[in-house]
Each structure stands twice: as structure tokens, then as C-alpha cells.
Image (spheres, rainbow, N blue to C red):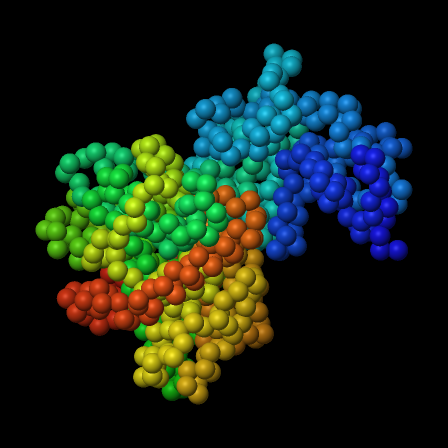
Length: 588
């Protein structure tokens, strides 16, 4: 039989064999509280170690309470999810967790979105009995350029370990010790900065407490805004506009581009620019590089390295440097849009303003936590001054707007400033998986064939599957393309390429689910793929409403080349807009 019959809280139901008690209860509207449980439905991965014991239930005939998240239903099972014994056990377990947890909720980065806090409210915990007998474990706090780690707040749910090892396949986190001293720590018990961590931040996105949080540059930005000697400009990534509204009660997928610009002006930024401009610039360089390699390859040049890999995602680049050090000549050398913008702002734009680059402060609003690390990489500094000074996340921007008491929903729609604010629809879709390569194809097709596209939308490059392949016809020349989002899928794609399974000309990789729209700096999506897909559709909607939909037709980008850069890939463009990569194979 494929079904079993069970009774849950006096209700008899049939469920598929192998269904856990947790899911069976949920199917009839009974939501059992849980802490360690996490369901990554789109990947068919569940984190259900049964370790927290918050989700315990009483099963007739069993002496001990059973964790519902890891206990499969059996024929004839009679289950009570909220008996006095169950409720007492949950409260006791939660009190024990709280006894070994810092009491700094007022200033904790997770306050207001903390599963432990929510559980305490749900279970009515107002005091911790026998607190005088509790002794907190004390761990040293650990910081990196992107992430903070405070293991005093770790509840051993091991969600971070699942996302890091099973989904991203980075292998930066593992459980150590037992009892009160048990904790999830970086691999090899290193500090985060010395571990294989690639700063994708997906561990932060799933951590139920404040054990893993983002480094916050907001205080430094506020000081810069208050300094009359500084000109402070801000750039906003494409994915931010598709998710920021969620922090103000709007439906997922609500585009708030104009209100976001207005809010940033209310915060005091001197100019509000669009990273989409730099995305168009990236296509000019990366697209030219792609065409150069393909043309030479078709001409029989044996030195050409294909496929070319996109280089916009800093977590992906970190991953590549750690695990594929023998292939560092394969990715495009084009910088990410964030770093291209910073370089142009502190040269071309600073020159237009007649100010020293040190007096121009460039701030990024990004959906990504790895961007915080990227802007601090040494290769993006000139004489000790970074091209991008500070990066904040979408969530941190929302917190700033609230702190300034700005009524976000009532703001008028305003336009980006020029000359670094004009963008095409191709720049907008950078935020969705497949968007970078679609933007590149729109330009590469027309440059390669000399023909205008009748339809600029390459739907074969879109979707939500973890690995996608497509062939685009460049007027008789087939161009094979691979796309992956989330690093575990990237590993499969690259390993397949090395084994001869795939034969690609170009590959796009994004570290986060759905691309930047699912970045770890976005409003928490709690593994809700419908929310991520709604953000993706929002970017495609904005693309369709753009007057310009191809990067090489952006007039401000063309003017930049005419006035300042010259031709794509020339010496000046290469110096300002390209980079190089580093071997970190000690962890591979």
C-alpha cells in the first residue's frame, strides 16, 4: 500500500507512506512549531535533524515524545500534537535554549524576524525557570568583510550547514562539540575569512537567530552623508527594486523603482544612480569579449578558452577561485556592474565634478552580501582608495528609510540622475537567473550578424530550473549556452563541462536562488520560491516597458565610450573595467 491511515488530534486521515508527522499535521491545518526544520522544496532537500525537539508530539504506545519533522507516519498511529505533556516539553526545551542565549534582543540584528523570539511569544515564555543554575557558553565573535558570526546565538538547528554543504556545496560549515558547547563552526575551525566561505550569505538568509548576520556599513554611510566635504552618490542594483517594497508591506513582485529613488534622495544622497547603467557597460565589455573568443574559435585559433563564464556574481567568483583554480583564464575578465560603476564614478564622473576621487563616496545598495566583500578586494583600490566605498543590502536600506521616518508608500516616483542613471531593459534583467546571458545575447547577436532582432526576448534562456541549456541561432551559427543558479548546480555544470558532457560557448552562473533576486541581502524569502519567482517576473515587466532594451543602444553608455573610454576592450577600458583572479586552492 502507498497510503497509511493515522489519527492526529482526533482527526483520521490518509497520507502517502513515508510522510512525516509534521507534514501530515500540516495537511489538515495543524502547524506544529519547529526551529531546526527547513524545507527547500524546489531542491527536494529538507533540514529535519529533529535536534531542537520543539516539534515533539505524543504518539500512543511510545514512551518518549517523538520529533514530528523526522518521524514517518505508520499505519494506525494515534498522534497528539498539543497534549499537556507535549506543551510542557516544548516550553522546557525552549527555556533551556534561552538559558544559553544572549539577552540582547533590543539590539540584535535579527530582532523582529527571529524564529527563537517568535517561538517564545507563541509558547508564552515570560521567564526562564532556574536561570540561576544556567551557565552560558562563551564563544569568540568572528567577523569577515561580509559576515558576522556570533556562536553564542547558535541553536544548533544546522540550517546553515545544510544550505552551505548540500545546496551551495561550499563546505565552509560543520558541527563540532557536544552538549552546551556544541556549535556550527567554519571548516577546519578557521575564522570565516580563512575558511572556504565564499560570502554568498545564504547561511544568513536561513539562520533562525542572530548567529549569522551581515556586516553593516550603515553607520559609516551616515557619517559620510553628514560630512560637508564629501559628495556621496548611491547606485542601486536591478534586483533591489523588485523586492524593497516587501519591507513596507507590498506584495512580492511590486516594482518600486521610482519610490526607491525618491527615498534615497530623502536620505540625503547627492546623486542617485542606477547599477543597470553599469550592467549595460558590462555587456559592452563582456559581450565584446564573448564575440572575440567565439570569432577566434570559429577561425580555428587553438589558444581560445571556451566557454566564457560570466563574472558578475562575486560569490560565484570566490567559489571559482577556491574550487577551480586551474581554470582561472576561462571567466570573463569584466568586472561586476558594481565595480564598473565605482571605477567610472571615481574617474569619469569625479573628473566631470572637478573633485578628487577621495572626496567622492560611492555607496551601493545590493541584494547580495558578497558585494560587501567584493568592494573591499585589494584589486579594486587605487592608491588605498576603494572604487566602491560601502555596500548595504536591500534590508539595510529599508531600515534606513524607516529610521528617517520616510513614508515609503506615499512617495512620488522620481527618475535616476544622469549621466550614470540611464539604462536599458537588458540591464534590468541582470537580476534574474539567465538575465545576464540574455542581455549579452541581445547585443552579441546584432553585432555578430549585423541584423536587428525582431524579438529581443530569448525565452529559451529563462526559467527556474537549477541547470538550463539552450542553443541560440546567430543567423546560422549555433551558440550553446549553459545557465545555473545556486553553487551546487554550478559545480554540477562545470564538472559536466570538464568531463565532456557539455559543449558550451558561454555559461552564466549566479550563486543565489533565482539569481540576485534571491540574494541574501534581500527581504527574507524563507525558501518561498513563489516569492522569488514574483520578483523575477517584476524585472521582466520592467524590461518590457523600457524604451531601450539593448545595452549597445544606451546613449549614455555610448557617450561614455566616445568621451572617455574609446573602444571596448582597449587599454583604458581594460584597465578601468576589467580585473584578474586569484588562486585559493588550499581548500579544494
